[in-house]
Length: 74
Image 1 (cartoon, rainbow, N blue to C red):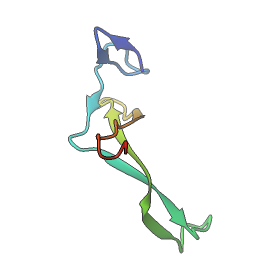
Image 2: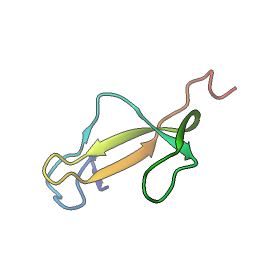
Image 3: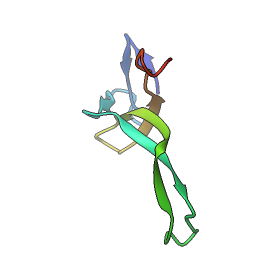
């Protein structure tokens, strides 16, 4: 997404600032999922933590990898 003065703006609406959600989100692995969407088990020990940014006007979404805490870096 375009950055101006350290602020994030929507790709579709260049004058609309992107808003960050209040909390981090997790993208985790789903084991055994089928293409029909049935089955599968969420593996809470897998995946990554992300920071989502959303355009309130069109719903455009970008995800950025969240910074690791000092304990996670060990």
